[in-house]
Length: 359
Image 1: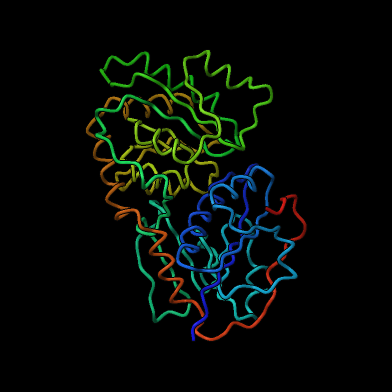
Image 2: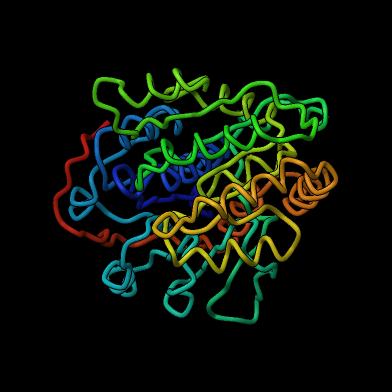
């Protein structure tokens, strides 16, 4: 009899990494548990990342990476973090655990399955003939339940601008971008329809004494701090344009039909952002480490004053994710990958001690 599927998630988040990996894997964890799977998580990061995992994953069991060394690996092990993965994959290569790498094409020749979920990845499906398979493209983009529960609103009836640079804003750009965007809104001679400006400061955003929050509020921004997923979904759905950190949030904006302008946290993501723009989806403002203020103003002004571009960009993104069922499609592929025979015990990868508290 086929064993009940078992899945281990090896994740990192918090600090300069942000929370995208945590939130994305949490969606997979919840969906897998609903299917009756046995799911565990091993998290490297800070307490903010651990707290976010507990909420987003509906308290899926979670340990430190180091704690996994003494536990038997699950039949499937999924790696969702930006760190080097060779040692982890080598440890698992001699075991019966099948390996899946999420959103990192560097290991497609080492992992049993590589999944490249997102608007910026080219589309192609897995080949059953290939020993190393790849799932890629927007149809595999992972969307949480909170977003799926919010209905799409007519774009041209929306009156909000949204600024959000991820869970931590690792380059501290919020205070720099906010006045650039508001100056364009105030100076524009076009009736753009945006009546209020909203900024979201993520749960890992550092703001001692709330100085940044008070500064933004004084400049006319409505500030939201570490809001739940449902509130973020509603805010996205009510926004005419969003200026976002390049990452998992772009899938959520696509679902809500909200056009975006993005800032990449890592220069290595610049080609992906430019590729997405070449497909008629979004605008790339540049890399966080080398942003030019006048370029930001000019590109935002063009997007703000071009209602046709807003509608076409949003529509292309919405159609690309094909109903937003990426997590369901991924789990269907993982079921095919799950070993048919009983699983033999093995050891999880270990990168040393972390400071994450077990939930």
